[in-house]
Length: 215
Ligand code: AP5
Ligand code: ZN
Image 1: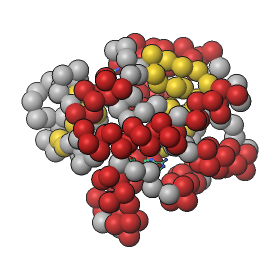
Image 2: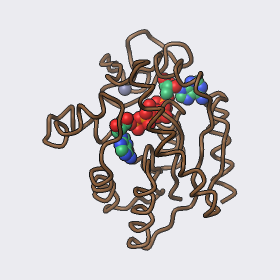
Image 3: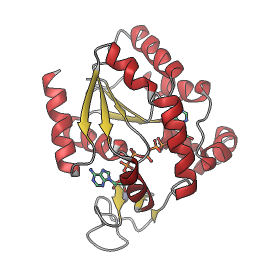
């Protein structure tokens, strides 16, 4: 199945995408991760987007559509999980066009519902593994051994440059202005299912699994 995980920053999209890769052999396509990777590698694209992302604003539609188009070329047997894309109506239309051209279909859009107060706590407590990308939280999902990734044993654990309360405000504003209209867009297309993103990680994963098994 090809699905979109839709929700504000900190809703748990990345956490659930990683789960779906493990349990269903799906492939995560995170435009946020692709852009962060370009910055880390110091590419021309990375230099172009670094300031925009540090402020919490969206990069241009052309950039992310190009990234997604590239990654979709190889196909994915278990299906794609679009994480953090699309984020504008223009991106949503572009994705529909790409799907049609590939003879593929978008099967479900899963809206992860959370409230803004929870997002601040989630984002300010987040850290990730620089080696394998595993996502942790100081309170809700600490590593078993302090400073060591549970998954790969790396000690390269880090926090994101845009995970502070100030930047989060801009990211939330961008979400409400530009991304939240997608909820109505996909509802009208009959593709939307909502899950409670405030539940525990396992319970959210179960809710997503039951949506996927029904569709
Ligand atoms: P991106 O990397 O996509 O960031 P985001 O949308 O802000 O999403 P996050 O990664 O912050 O949150 P998440 O929902 O994945 O939450 P997570 O699972 O980590 O984008 C970054 C930037 O790139 C954008 O600002 C923009 O500039 C640019 N960009 C990217 N895509 C773009 C596009 N399409 N168009 C234009 N610009 C684009 O969870 C958060 C924390 O909560 C973690 O610590 C986790 O452990 C914890 N947690 C998760 N689930 C639970 C749970 N159920 N209970 C308790 N804790 C939980
Ligand atoms: Zn790791």
